[in-house]
Image (cartoon, rainbow, N blue to C red; front, side, top):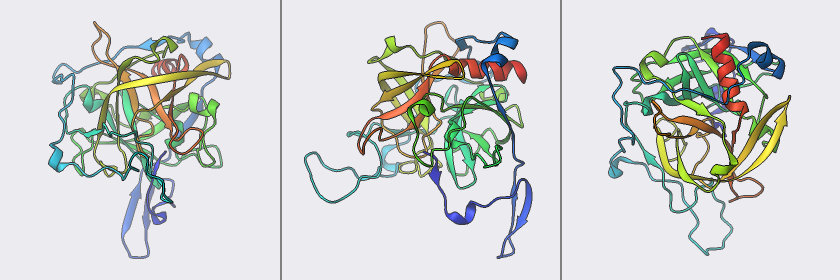
Length: 327
């Protein structure tokens, strides 16, 4: 669910600059290295932990709920079919009326840990999970046919052209599965649809980061999860949007390379652009919230169907592995 940009932006070189026909010069970050993580890698480093801790910088103000943008400044949501109306008109995305999303404008912790992931041809959402470690969806990554990836950049809490914590490009990507999403996302892919990206700068020193925890099916039906992402409608892809009181409905267990994860089904509101954004919750005594699910797919099974994310033991395992290899 990476949101699209015009085709003229799709073809990018592997770094450096390119002069276009109109004589303008465009510069691009270098392409990252990609690293497939296996069960043997985890065993060798003994990092198969089911969680990791959040961090809040000493000088970062804490606000448990974000500052919402004034309603009159928010853009209108996408049109939704009125209840009971039947006509030959399509619906743009899966928002379950009433739309509960709100644009936020807040640079306190932990909201500053979330941000916009820019890629050639589109964008997605992500969250800091370490000093220079960002998690997003695998299908947000611009995978190349040769097994590599095109460039990505991450800008924490971008709001229009405001970038209060700067931005950084991705130098390395750790992954369980390469999920392209072009032909749809399968159940096993959705369960493992997350990657950990190492950034070119230690943005986490300023933003802090969220922790993580293995999702448990015992939490299905609980009203406790929040989400931040960059949807293409009310935020126009450049304003962060927040939802709270999220509920995960059910889980489907999946296995890949000996690792276990869940396809987590839900009916929380989202549209393209929010892929890779975290679903997170707070636990008593913790420094900050913990990511439990990364947003993956919408309209599961049929138009207007539920949405899906990936979460389970393999999510914190991947984070902990990346942190152990590149602290």
